Length: 353
Image 1 (tube, rainbow, N blue to C red):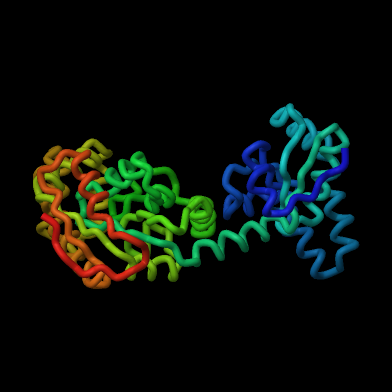
Image 2 (tube, rainbow, N blue to C red):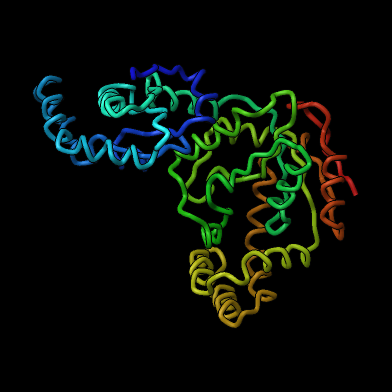
């Protein structure tokens, strides 16, 4: 069966119905890919370099011949892998620019009865879209608060109530701070993070507020796009306040049971900022399973750091909201009641008790 060339516009709908295959090398795939794709490389990392070098030195004809020489003996293996993984024999396919690699794989699979939809322009077309998407303006509403204020929990509850929410830390596989990677999967590359973010932003209604947690420009190894981060500093912000006891209890519920060695390493990374004595106290308390001691020591540092971050946000667009002692559902209700009307407009700074 002949292949069908698929525009990016039509891709969005069809991807919900069909499996998606990336024909690039495993290294390219690991760097970034369309979320949900499965990698069936035509050329592996070493072969791709070999063919690419030959293309530059001797031209396309010799590079093409070399490519077929390398991959030809594996044709039957690739077909068998595809038949095993996709028994329905129908899928979407792409490579870097919609060129030779996806064309070869498309031809191979149509020979054994597959119905192929090949993405026009390949991954490059998709990546151009995601790169631009994460740099557009959005109606952000920033949820701020000191470490341990349970902002992520509140965002999850807001989403359950029908609010638009993007969990930046969830996409980054990192909770922020020196402790943020403990117990988390490996972080995506910056490029893949932008792909994941763009996928969520594509579903956003621009006439409604989009809640995000206040973050620094860097989340672990992820760096937020400059324009997106700038929007966060200039957007309306609800700054929640809780007691130290509530914050310590929440941090203990998330971190106290984690690996003591990893917790100690995270503290040691902060030694220059904490000082020798406080670092020693915190590590000893972790090893003694005393979160009521080591968490307050860390909060002294993080609270000071957070005050600098708060100063960077536009004061005229900050609402201070006291959530001390409230049940979780009551906190969510108060956040919804406090949510500024309209998007992207200035709101006088004030305090809600």
